[in-house]
Length: 227
Ligand code: CA
Image (cartoon, rainbow, N blue to C red; front, side):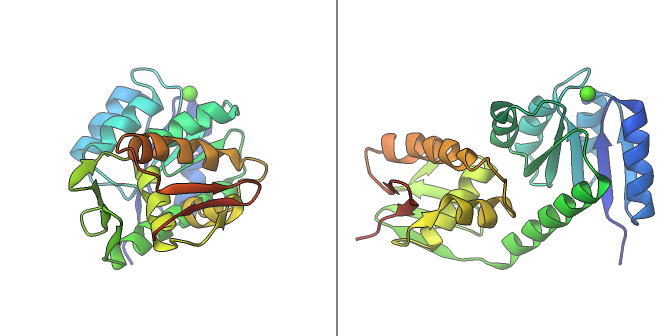
């Protein structure tokens, strides 16, 4: 099997070196870059299987890089952040990152997150279906969502959350279930990330089209209703 190509964009030279050596030991092909602008250029010029992206970088921030990359690529991105405030993490995920990891982290934790992110890429590409709930349509082949034929612009995670809700329409899903399925594992004590994403979806779908697709069962969870 060909070695997976990883791009690590991290300006803390020691940390970058440490991660690079560990990933090489695990069999990954690792390229390291210490500057945001250079990193974005490398992603534009070369094909990588995954990007490990520091949040605070000289040149361009991790969030800005992520936003720009998402305009042309679905490559898995794991954000590395020194800050542990939830809102910073949510901003990172909203920019299109697949996951985030707070520094300092154990290398085993990073490896586990990488495996989850790779698995998700794989799972997404095999299922090609067309789903519909009262005017809301999801084309999983094009990863496109429309309401009454109008295209709705969603970030990667918003799309994955909506897809999960629609695939399980009329079933109430708990925050923990949603985290496990959409984010890949439990974010212990941080299930409010689900509430934040439900709010994003509601403003882009329910409010924008004056419908009510996403329903809340207080203290239980969420579901999409199809009558
Ligand atoms: Ca940094």
